[in-house]
Image 1 (cartoon, rainbow, N blue to C red):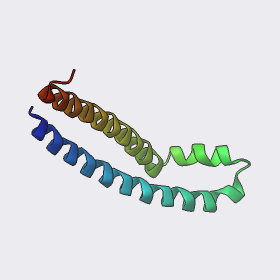
Image 2: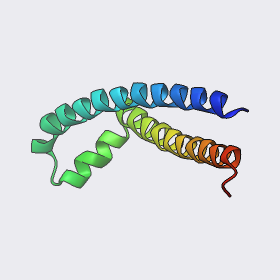
Image 3: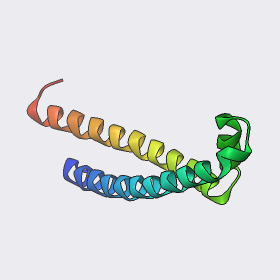
Length: 93
């Protein structure tokens, strides 16, 4: 891939990251509502968190977090590749 194609790829990754960040924000709101409804009936915050993790939204939240982490790694690697290609083009090693 050329550096320009890599930069385009970086834009696509940033768009996906933004989409998943919005999804995570919505799930965080759902988690807060779950906490508010469940906490009075449970002994600890940790127990509520564990219960939430077993719900569909909790599982979805874990998946979204993993996707965000993956996208961060891909964006970092792409950025490094573009920087190396740019330095090679300038003759800087």
